[in-house]
Image 1 (cartoon, rainbow, N blue to C red):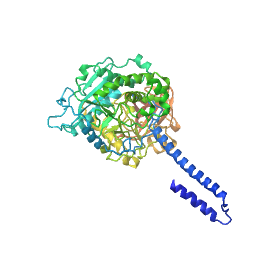
Image 2: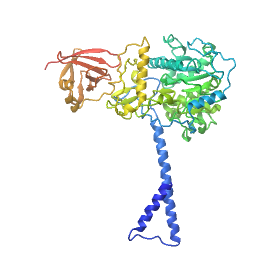
Image 3: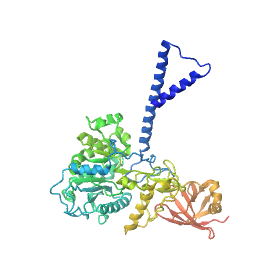
Image 4: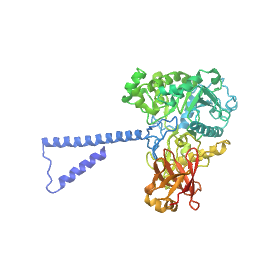
Amino acid sequence: DKGDAALLVNLRTEQMQKPGARRPQQGGSSKASQVRLFICLGTVALLGIITYWNVQFVLERSHRHQAQDGWAGSARPNHRYRGASEVALADLDDVDGDDADLDDIADAAAKEADVPTNADTSAHDVGVSAGGGDCPGDRRPYHTLLTAQSTTYQNWQSRIMYFHWKKQKAAGGPCGEMGGFTRLVAHKKGEPDGLEGEIPSVFVTEYTPAELARFKHFAVMNRPFSVKQMLASPEMMARITEDYIMIAETDHMFLRPLPNLATKEKPVAYNFGYMHASARQQPVIDQIAPGVKWQAVQPIGPSPAILHLDTLRKLTDKWNDYSIALKLNDQADKMFGWVLEMWGYSIAAADLGIVHEVLTRFQCEPGAQSRMTKNYVNEYYIHHYTYGSEYRLDGQPQGVNQIGEWSLDKRHYGGAYPPRNLQAPPDKGHSASNYAPRWLCDAWNEASANIPDWPATKALGTIGWRREAATPAQISASPLASAIVGTKWAWGGVPGLVFGPNGALTTPWSTGKWGILPPSNGSGELIFCDFSNALHNIAFDLDAGTFVSSRVGDGEEVRGSKVQA
């Protein structure tokens, strides 16, 4: 650029002014000097371009997950279940770069939309109001469709999601555009699962284990399959009196009332930074949807999205068919990974010529590396907690792909509900300037406290998930650890448990590690004892020479006693 050019000229001038410096030759040699200068300027420009695209590449890669989000996975200790960095959210503009505010988009959409003259605005059997006769004539309510499976993991998320959806619907008032709500559940052969009394729900057939095996156990394939079944059922569709559908996920938390951002001709969807197509995807697209060019494939998935019901009907068959075709294509499966079904949706939309308004402020996906002020709840509509928030107790981020000393991650609760009254993140360091994890923790606590039959759980809260073998320095600083190092104990009456130096653990069955857990919600210091692929938290009574171990996850207790030397 101009600054770099001026710097090069100044450096060259300084060199010529030095005693003994060679002067440029006259005549034809001046052309050579100009050529050299142009080469330098060109090199600087080229380096700038390369640097820019390297930064873009790193930012895009930083968004990528490696784990499927349909169920909780297993992990190496202290490492995330996916290979993703935290998301740093800075771009508050829409993807077209016109700096349009979402509220302005909502106003424009209302003006452009075809307002139905005979829309049914009466309350229906989903238990929510669709507005009244005093509402503006250009009101365009939409129906929220929560796609889910009936698993412990998704059930507790669904209950929290619906609690906060109701809260924001009420905040929007009787004339808000958040209309009805249906939880669309893939469950066995369509049997109810017990939550239908709390959350308005319909049930469809889910893929059998044998069918899922064909899809390499990729349970997200149930989403387009579920929507296809719902659209084919007159009974289920009778529940939906709105002309628009908002497709939501179980880990979506509504931050504020969401207006209808779509029009009949223009659906809206979120801009996923890790889904921008390129020429690299063209060979796969050619196999699935011949004639579709990668430039037409938008960086979107089916959720969050708002679209007219006619558009959803038009899209669903190809969304389902293309998702299956992609999953059964080894090249596509390897290329698209856990977002494959989202690519099925975006390729189907491109094939049908359905162009979405792509918005970055539809939702946010913050983690520990973000810096979200309290005002973020007014800048976005949905908090998507797809990333865990991982902090050290000093308030600094734990690090990329690391489980934190303070950890809030949905994947901890694959087989059990999160407990009530989760401990808030540290109120210091980076954590004090990042409001999103604190809001999310408070939102989980608010929902669990106000859902009367939230089940008791033996799962850990936000402390105790990071488990590092005790170091000599940690042992010497802890009276409890100092007292047990080198001692022998019986585990459930079976001798052979030895707390060795450096956190080494010997058991009658295998080796493992032990370490120190920080206090949590007023509890005293605990010792963890991990072996045979199970995690155990131990409370000692040194005076009595006994301990009680509680297994993480199911809370199974084992008692132990000290073996006298």
